[in-house]
Length: 520
Ligand code: F6P
Image (cartoon, rainbow, N blue to C red; front, top):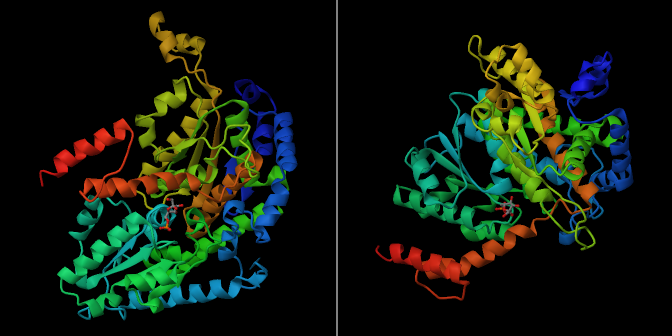
């Protein structure tokens, strides 16, 4: 790369290896690719069937083969007259109906006409959910916090079954003015149901009568029966459908917390941004298709260089939860080692995804990214106009973002160090940066809901493209099941309600925990 950027036609490289779509600008020139590599990667995408599988997804085919379902999250952000169908029936009327109900409900909460058990308006909303029912809406609410009405309701997210999280949230809440969204596709998830039950007890202990709980609980789910069984009025249930995967669900009623936090208009703008990226993904030629290009660059590093991880570095505190969101999106989708037909995968699949908001990462792990023995491709993401700023801060932030990508690419040689008067020769090898380390830089003007929608959809489609090339099903998650099953008997043992057989290590851990828990 150092050589390519030293050549006279370097500006052409930047021009040819840049793309613009849906309000996002991608500079992918700082990658280890020649024009020939790039053409071959696009050929690989073509031969792997990216175009056909993309079209099958948009056509509502059951591309989630192991669960025999469509994966049609793109319909959620489509225009009302779009032709999306699942099993022959249009999904659009159902989507429009739920959106209208979300709009009405948001207006009632914001206007103060939705009241708690003693007639007061709502000041705090708690979204109880986990995984896709938490990470997406939590990340978006954080990213768009600058748009929230300071007088509007405060949003809280509780996901972990560790009682600490809920207990620490509850101390900040007034039960008479708190609304709970129980958000769960299945409405059976252990963590979510435990937290929802504890919240119900909290209301009952703090002034609400059983008959008044309907004022404090709404549900987001596909499972009406379980919602009713829990005691939530089905009139207060916001439906979604089994053809939406949890990690792709923030565009559905799972986004109710987003609408409540930043307003329904902003939520709709997020949907429009997602749609703009969908249109680009569906229509742009592969070599100008941002999700395809980014997906294939990921394949290049994962499979041709064997790089085991990739780093997401948003230079924006507002986007600080984006790496965590991406971890579920990429690692739950593509952390598989079996191909669609059940044969073992021949190649490595999802890399470990990690990262933190810049510049914090620079003072923690960037040492390793610059000089470590593993090469880590980095995605730098930055809004050019900050959501909020103080004089002088944003130029420093952006300068650091661009400088990191520059340093990774160009490095610093021993000769440069000596020329810069480093006289202690014993230090020189420690101070050399080999450079030639790859990164993408993704820029947006402002962090609007629209551009955030496009950014999320970009990474969704990038994940999909990689799944196609690896020939795996990106839409199931069987790998999360076994641990859940094994936890049930262990919980019974820990609470003295049973015994089971375990390996020696697990048995000893249970015995140790029981010893402490038994002390009361
Ligand atoms: O355990 C993994 C998972 O199934 C995720 O795929 C999902 O997003 C999360 O649990 C939560 O599931 P639910 O929305 O059904 O509570």
